[in-house]
Amino acid sequence: MTEALIVVDVQNDFCPGGALAVPGGDEVVAPINAMMDRFDAVILTQDWHPAGHSSFASSHPGKNPFESIEMPYGTQVLWPDHCVQGTTGADFHADLRTDGDLIIRKGFRPDVDSYSGFFENDQATPTGLEGYLRSRGITALTLAGLATDFCVAYTALDAARLGFAVTVDLAACRAIDMDGSLAAALTHMESRGVKLQSRV
Image (cartoon, rainbow, N blue to C red; front, top):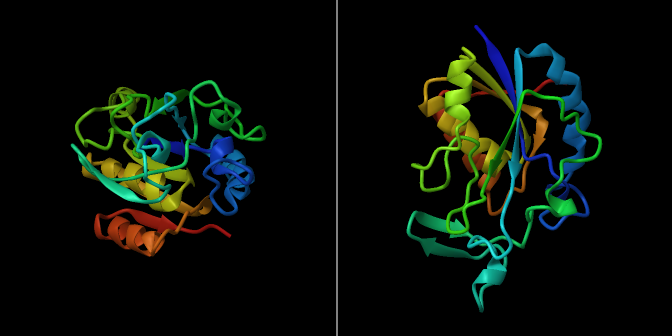
């Protein structure tokens, strides 16, 4: 079995002090760095929004961050402006190893958000990650990064749906946990065959 590590969105805006800070987000950096050499391939995903992205609350007059609206592809949480292309907030955390095999940028289409490393939120527009993994002969994935209940979970669920063996290393993830979103995401992942692992 050939296994890849998928490092999800360990970017400044998701770390303490960032525009959409995940509690303890910077705590994933050291364990992820320590894991990288154990895998046949390492892929990093990077949220990469244009200014004025449709998922930003600021793009919808009268709406506040963390409210939801309906988009053509379904319900969309509105976020604070974050990970805008070319800004410091979009950069990877300074201490994160970025010497992996591939960086997948997502969320760069103005009219559709992208949590998953595999597909935009319309569940139809691919990022190219699946094709890369298939061409490398990768059959198993371990996921780590930010945030457990959004981008990590969506990536894990898509990976499982595509037939990969999927493990989420919870010790190297942190969650937003908005209105019970973490418990819901963990339950959903387990129901789809994703292995939840916590290394101490």
